[in-house]
Length: 332
Image (cartoon, rainbow, N blue to C red; front, side, top):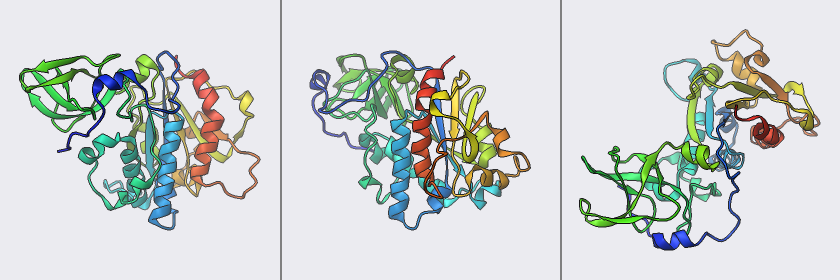
């Protein structure tokens, strides 16, 4: 079980922000979601664990920079084609490092098991996302880990401060939760736990985004092949806008890009062989034109000088290309 991390007093946290520029918010909620899909083969294409870790870190940083809510790792390895539940090494590595980086530092010891894939992950630049709060920061929401449950009373939650939090809901021990904790700390002595605790409420992890427009990290999903990516969305009704990226895609000037209004957008990237190769290896979609699987199929770097663009480079190029349009047409 994770030890309580030392931090500045909760009252002080409410009075000061950490030094440095803070991620901006729109001042209003964001109803739409952005999902980004990347292939496990981008890790298989690296030469050593140092480079693989760096690439996985680049993917995670890009997801945070561009407010990605769901990071999907496409298992485009031969193992995925077998459909026997096995996962390719590259996809597993990428998903594991991405989940490690998304988890707030004070929760990692309890939530992320030790694994050889993570032996260099601690050297990567942090995401520095809003839910990775410094000890001196206070926001209306905070991530926590349930440590104890008192039936009929509530739960005891570690939120990375000097005081634990109390929530009236009974939640399973060792469950990661998002808490609404108010604009300032409300502290009350809880006789059932024998200490003064910060009062909170368990809320859906989407609430900071929907209510405040506050980016709150990404979930990680493993998809078996391209068909698993396109047809196993966690959102009701699936993705209503699917964007594929490819050097064979349509060329559109950034200023002329028009998108349909959407609620849940998916932006997909291929590995060294592109999305076309992923489609060829997936029996569920084989035989169909890859472009037909997506609502838009775009070439976002038509004037490339290099013969090749690596996937980690394509992600930054394409998400920059799409950023303004996604924010303009998101929500409906």
